[in-house]
Every structure is written in structure tokens, then in C-alpha cells.
Amino acid sequence: MQLSADIQKLPRHFLPQDFTITTWEALEPYFKNLVDRAINSVDDLQAWLKDMSELEAVVSEDACWRQIKMTCDTTDKSLEEAFTFFMMEIQPKVQPYADVLNKKLINSPFTKELPQDKFFTYLRSVKKSIDLFREANIPLQAELAVMQQQYGVIAGKMTVEVNGQEYTLQQASKFLQNHDRSLREEVYHKIQTRRQQDKDAMHDLYSKLIEKRHQVAVNAGFTNYRDYKFVEMGRFDYTKEDCFNFHEAVKLHVLPLVEKIYQQKKEKLGLDTLKPWDTEAEPLAIEPLKPFTTGKDLLEKSEKCFNELNPFFAACLRKMDELKHFDLESRKGKAPGGYNCPLAESGAPFIFMNAAGQMDDVTTMVHEGGHAIHSFLAHPLELSAFKEYPMEIAEVASMTMELFSMDYWQSFFDNEAELKRAKEHQLERVITIFPWIATIDKFQHWVYENPTHTVEERTAKWMEILNEFSTNAIDFSGLDEFRKINWQRQLHLFEVPFYYIEYGIAQLGAIGLWMQFKKDKQAAITNYINALSLGGTKTLPELYAAAGLKFDLSPNHIKTLMEFVKDEMEKL
Image (cartoon, rainbow, N blue to C red; front, side, top):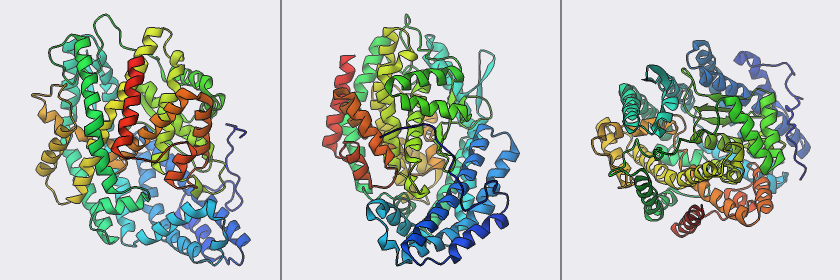
């Protein structure tokens, strides 16, 4: 397969070249055209699908840019207004047309003549959308889209002062690596106390989101939002029971390893008790890892690393840089978190993150870089809908890149000892993230199964689940008030409900690909590229198979993969 990162903006054949979305009145005629157009042959249908795909790409990219600009600067009211305008005035008017177009596609006698190997997953998804569509949900979904962004507005204002200087919470967290234990403790308390100032606002926002989401589910004929969301997210290949099995497997096969990691950490630091502000620290003689200085430095080093792994991967980052599709450094007024935003029309995605010079930022950068490569590989597929791949494979793209790139992290660390520490840190993270994934996922199941719960009941349930997946190696005594609102730092709960177990499922896939990589680097990279190039044109088990993986959430499979990671850690 000839790979090129010279990604081109899709040529327009249906909309004018200079068309931009300003009002619904200007946009609506293109939807009307598609609704009214006669389809008299399979060729007509293919042409109609291409025009619909073009329109979808233009609308999607416009929405994405509004969100990107708003998250880059949450203090600029005009950017928030532009996003809100789209979500309240454009998106709700698109939805009824999308439903009519979906029905037109499914009811066309020529649809069965489309090549099934390519169209099966798309048509399955269209039928699902028809089943879920309710006129009554349009205003609710518009309100939800706007409300969800309030999380970033609240969190974006959070700063603390350390040594007389103001830091975002992301920037302040680097002090948790400091040798001075009393400084670590002080900063930990400052960060948590700052979160507490807005805990009621966060509780209030979450309660309102739950209420509205539950209403959406009821309107669509579901007993709860979890069951609705499983259908909406296209979870055709696993069930809530598989999620529950995954939670149990984490307790059984992952928690003992987490326990061991933190026991070793305690011994290494020579502490009687390990507190939450100690988990990122190093012994006195060892300086915290400083893999890069600025956002520019992070990008240059990531490019170098990707180039060693596969020149095409580096070329993707270069192309994005050329287009100014990066915003990497943490600053006040910027929304928290990190993401790769695919841009359906221009093709080259946008990476947003909050880098503060830490090892975790390297992981985030290569993770989002893996997503970006996925966007590049899927862009040549002929319909926008074919590029709508399941999140469980999207996260394989990113998490595999974390593991594949490790052997080339010399670009960040020029001495062997630091490189070894960085790899240890990464493998520890691969394991220690699982209990948090299980905690967040299990919490969401309860939240939406019991939508009328009180804040007190929610807090009690959160603490119960958190303790279930917590290690005894870390001493949390006296910190319950902080722990009670620990979930509020997870933006997924607010902005993308039920999107979290994907990280766990994908981590299993990533470890599987890394096992292949350890045996045959080239074959593993080929499998990775082949699977990602399919976009969403295959089912989840088929996409995993294309990557040489088994789609398996069973405790036994998880045990095998965990033992492999443990062995690799011991080799270091």
C-alpha cells in the first residue's frame, strides 16, 4: 500500500467552493435538493450518496472548528456564542432532514445493489439512527450539546498559586513529581481544594445532564439512558454484561499488579506510607523526567520519534504542523484535557492538549498522534460515513502508538537510565489505568440505571465503587472529602457519556498488537495500518481481525495480556 501524508481537502462538486455556513436559510436548499432528487438507478444512488457525503463533511467540519476555537479560548464569549449558535440554530434543523434522508436511502430499491462488503456497517448504522430518531429529542439534544460545554468553562477557570505564581491545574500537577514531599502535599491539597470550590456547580451541571439524558432515552422508548446509549453508540458487538465481566476481570487480574507497582514505589521512596501525592515522585537522587521544554519542542521530538518508527507517521504530524493544526501548551482560559479532532473535509485533523513539560504529556502526544494517523489513513475512503469508525478501534490506534513508539523515545531522553524510567512509567500506566476505567464505567451504569438519585446517594455510590477498585498500597486516610468529588475531573462523564470503557477494550487490543510488535515489528505495523485504513467499513470483530487480534473481553484473555505486560516490566 502506497502511503502519503499529502492529504488533500475534498474537492466540492455539490456545494459552491466558497460556501460557508452562516445561516440555516443558506444551508437548507442543499438538504432539500437531496430530499427531492429522483433516484432511478444504482448509479443515481451512488451519485446521491457522494453529494450527501460532501454536505455531511462540510457541516461536520464547521461544527468541529467552532468547538476547537472555543476550547482553545474559553474566555472569548464570541467563540462560545458561535458554537452555541450552531448547536441551537443549525444542528436541530439538520436532524429532521437527516432522518428523511436515512429513510430515503433504506427505502430505495437500489440500496440492495450496493456492494454489501463495503456498505453493511453503514446501512446497519443508518437503520439504527432511524429507529432512535424522535422529533421530541431534537431540542433536548441541542440543549445537551451546549450544556456539556459548560464543563470546560468551569474547569478552564481553575488555577492555583504555587510559590507566588499562578498555574492551571495541569501545570501545577508537575509539582507532584518534586523531591520535596511537603511541597507535593501542599500542591495536592491546593489542587483538590480548588476543585472543591466548584463542586456544587459540577454536581448541579451533572444532575441536569442526567435528567435531560434520561428524558431523551424515555422519548425513544428505552427504560434508561444506558440502554439507549449502547444502541446510539452502535455497540453491536458487546453488551452491558460484557462490561460487568470486564469490571470483575480488572479486580481479579489487574488490581494485584497495581498493588505490587505501588508497594514497589513505596519501597523505592523509602516511605512508611504512600500517599496520593507520592505516586508520581522519584527518590531524592533522581530528577523528575523532563522530556521537552515547549510545545514546539514536544512536536519536533514527537516527529523524530515517529520517523524512526515509520516515516509516514512523521509525515502526518509535519502536514498538520504546516496547516497549524496543533494547540499543545497549557494556559489559563483553555479547556482541560486533550483530543484529536478529525476534520471531515480537509482531512488533516487538529490536536489539542495541555502540555506542561511532563512525561504524561509525551504519552498524550503520541496517543493523539495515533488518532491523527487513523484520520489520515481513513480519509481516502469515498464516503464520510465510511470514516465513522467505532471508538473501540479508534482507541486501539492511539494506545498502540503509545506502546509502539516506546522503543524510539530516545528523541525525548538522551540517556539510557532516563529512557528506561520513561518506559517503566508507561508500562505502569498501562496497568494502573484499568481500575480507573472500570470505576468510571461502573459508576455510569449506576448513575443512569438510577436517574432520580440525590447528590448524597451519588456520592455514597461513587465512594463504594471507588473503594472497590482502589489499592490498599496507597493511604487515603483523611482525604475522603477530596475523594468524594474525584469523578468530577473526568470530562467524559459530562461531555461524552459512556465513552470510557473503550479505553479498556482498546488497551487490550493495543497490548495484543504490541505482543506482535515484539515478535515482528514490520508485520505488526502492517496489521495496524491495514486495520485503520478500513475506517468503519467493517464490524468491530472484523477490524480487530484485520489487525491480527481477537475481539475478546473474557477474564482469561485479560489475564494473558496482563502477564505479558508484567513480564515486559520485569525485563526492564
